[in-house]
Image (cartoon, rainbow, N blue to C red; front, side):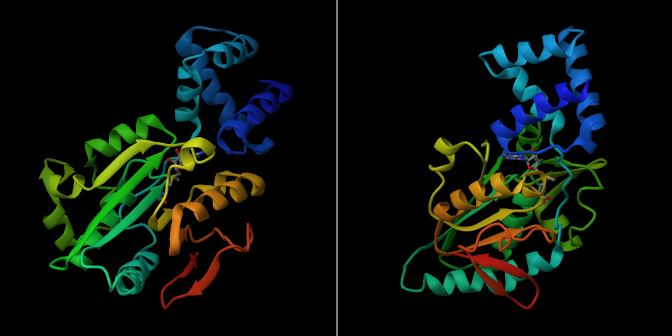
Length: 271
Ligand SMILES: C[S@@+](CC[C@H](N)C(=O)[O-])C[C@H]1O[C@@H](n2cnc3c(N)ncnc32)[C@H](O)[C@@H]1O
């Protein structure tokens, strides 16, 4: 792949989904494009790019995006942040709903990958609200359709569950040989579906959330696409709603519209 070809493809992907590959990623992108070319049987980048752009079903673009996204994740990732969610944020949310008879909490795991983050949040919220008049639901979305299929299956290897406390492993997973299956009681309240964070029309349908987790997703974007997503998140949150980003990510750098809150265990942004 020449540098010109790389830039053409890179810019195309950036416009569609906000992920920005700088020139250092040429090799990474090239390897994955070559695999796609072999799979559909074309032997020049030119032919591949034309095929992808004029495939009106969007299937080839989706296959390429599935190959290009980085999906690394595991249960109970960034433990201190989750402690903050459990011990400080959930009680604040419940307090804010004090005048409601039946309290309903809506959470969004944006860029959920294979589902570990969404199931982790489900375990935490179930533990923290058990026996209370509280209902909850989690929306878990991703661009990559392959990871969403895995997320819905809810079947994980030892590496994914290495940080799950033993008591939760026994309570929320069913051991199947070397694999761990999420119990159905947890699955029922999680909705997995595809959503591109830069898809304006569908992002506008995301409303009324108390909390958004978007961790380790915006690191692949540039500042301009990060800002666009941050504004959609703002509209998707209820007044006073919270945003959790990955520990290396900062909302204040992107936009000043959120309030920065320093809790005991983490820094969180609030509408
Ligand atoms: C590294 S994973 C993060 C998973 C999880 N949030 C965590 O922190 O463990 C990043 C995910 O973001 C998704 N992603 C990247 N660009 C996206 C976009 N434009 N819309 C939705 N999801 C996107 C990728 O497909 C990938 O699954």
